[in-house]
Structure formats: structure tokens, C-alpha cells
Image 1 (tube, chains in turn green, yellow):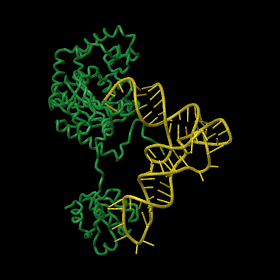
Image 2 (cartoon, helix red, strand yellow):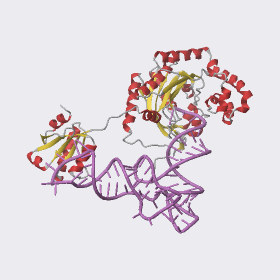
Image 3 (cartoon, chains in turn purple, cyan):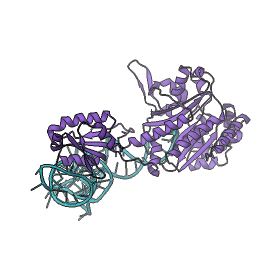
Length: 420
RNA sequence: GUGAGCAUAGCUCAGUUGGUUAGAGCACCUGGUUGUGGCCCAGGAGGCCAUGGGUUCAAAUCCCAUUGCUCACCCCA
């Protein structure tokens, strides 16, 4: 038997209502904040991600689905959306048409990691990008949108974490200070952290190892070494969150893995999923557009993992979908009337009803059971005796009452079914 | 890439210290008088016990390997 590829999942009809529900909330919320949907290709030139996300990141160095196409081009299935959106933004000069572009998306992503709870190789994200303004209100807006969506989905066990990485100059200064602090303790660091000491010293804060954390307790924090402009930016983000009633905590150790972040970074974490607890993450990236060959335009954005969010909803039992119903199930009593039944079903469907009928030549009893299983509001019975008189039987499945209806009187059938 | 656990019907799981035709519940199908659902009752279908090898008179059960899944690490959404 051929099975779905490792780390991929089928979304079966039983799950679709939850996905639709989430997608509707996302679209409605984004629309209210005046974000416009954008769709970019599933694959892009590999160099886009290498440059945009950063060569040294885990995503680029070991997680991308990269392949050579028949023309010899190196292509990559998108591992995240920001690089593609920025590429499209630059390619179509969207900044010339509008000074601030607020965009959102819902899309599959691909990363070749070992699957576990809340992590897949093909997964789905919704997210937003605002390109063209350095206003801290937009940083806060990202968090508000994400948080509001989670709240509308009924999630409770949430915490918002924010931090500021400042601008590159103050960050470089701080890195020096951190290096000086850690140097005397270098030998006590784990091997992984020793490596990061040279490649990306800030990421040592990501370590969950006790021996690293013990050393880091007294480490100088980036947030204490921000320049005035960055501090001011951060303060404005915080006050915007406060005025919007978003509970948040400052996590000075929130150092996100992608190279392009400046100023604000944030995560919304759920206590209701496994160890992959970040429902969304994002931040400001004022250097990325230029890095990708565009004008010097600032940006801010976030992305949220749909599978993780739905997992949290499932674990918190925060969503309930109503049972499916059909309007009419057509029961054909005599086999020779099936062509009339078919014609009637099509006609009722064209007039707007959700209609099902028997395609398996089953007994009346079996058809009735089927109607019940589909949770039919009405059964329309086509039988020899009544048919000879020119009428059909319409049975209300909750009351059990039956009435006769002229066999071509679709309007009467429809008005009865619609409850008028 | 590293580690641990698991693998029996469509689903959730039983299966004794290895012992004869491998079980239950749910779901599915057919009936319970000639043309009427739910509840109930009766019956039916459905398993190479993940795959391959080994130990044994005898393996779903013990051993080894392979594959797959799950969870965790790394990292991330």
C-alpha cells in the first residue's frame, strides 16, 4: 500500500469543518484590519531563501526541500512565506502603488524535519506582512491580530512573549559584551553552545540545557544595552499592547532563529500542545527588503502554524461544529421510477436544496436508514401508488409526519423544506 | 542528524506461563412479511497478527533485522 509521505497528512472530510472555521476567522479578522490576501508560488528560486532567511539558519542549512528541475534550475519548496511575499512586493513594485502594503496569506509550507507533535514536513501557516512603515503600532498590530484570532477560536491557555533585538549597531556592541561575559565560562558551556559562541552567540540563550542556563542567569541582557531609538520603539510597542488589552511578558531571551529580524520579536505560546508550543512567531525586519534587492523599506510580520493551533483547539475542546444536515433524501420505492427520481433530485439541487438519493438500488428500509444517517430534514418518497395519482410523499424526519405533494410542484416542496 | 516507545479488523483495543479454527466494542452490510429511519433483536462480511529471518514439537506471544508510526532532543510555526 502506498502511504502519504512521512510528515505529510491527509485532511479528511471530517476535519475540514475545523479548517474552514479557522480560515474564515483568519480572513475576516485580517480583512477588518485591512490586510489584503496575497498568494505566491509554492516553489521559488533557491537563492531567494538562502539570501532572505540566512545561510547559517537551520532552515536553510538542513531543512529545505530543494531540487533541480529539468532545465537545471535549483528550486525550493517554500519553508516560510516572508521571503516570497517580499520578492513579490519588490518584483511588482507594490511600494509605488501604495506607500504602506498590508498583506496576509494562508498557505502550505515545507521543511524536512523529523515530525513530532505539532510539527510536519508539509504544514500550513497563516500570517501577515506590513511593508512600508517603521511605526511600532504595526509591530503591536501583528500581535493583536494573532491574539484576537486565537481568542476567537476559543483558546485560553496563551501567553504572549515579546523582546527587542534593537538595530544591528547596538546588537553588535552587545554581542561583544556578551562574549566578554561568557569567555571565562567557555569551558562549562555545552558543545552546542560552544559552537554558537562563534556562529551566533545570541542563540546560546535558546539553549534549554541546565548547565548553559546556570551560566546565563547573570548574563547581561540585550534589552539592557539597546540604543535610545530602539528602546523608544520597544516602549511604544508595549504601550500599544497595553491599550489593546493584550497581556504580555517581556522575554529577554527570546532570540528568534531567522537572521532578518530587527527591533521587535514575539511569540504566542500555548500551554495546551506538546513541546512545540509556539502557535505563532514574528517580528520586525527592516533590512530584508533591501537585502532582497528592493528599496530600503521596513517591514514587520508574523506566521502561525495552523496544525498547532488546531491541535490546541482540540486539546482545549474549544471548537464545536454543528452536525451536517441534508435538506431532502429521495427514496425511490419502485426501481422503474429511478429516472424520475434522478431528474427530481437534479431539479431540486438546481433550485438550491441539498439533496441526496440512492445510487445503490437499495431497499426502502436501507434508503431510510441512509436518510437518517445523513440527518435528512425531509424524505421525499417516490412510490407507485402515489405516483399513479400524480403525487409524491414528503416526510418530515423529526416529526414523522407525511404529506402528499403534486409531483411537479417543486416550489411547494422547497417552501415546506425551508420551513415557510 | 540523535534517543526512547509502539506495530493484532475501517477505528479503539483484549489476547493468560508460547498450545489447536485470533476476540470484543464501535462502524459497515442484510434481515425482523408484501412500500418507511432512529432504539432494540438476529445474522453477515471484514485480519499474511507491519515485513523478513531465527529459536521451538508448536510463535500474535521469545530473539534479530528491516520498514513504518509516535514522542522527545536540535530547531521551529
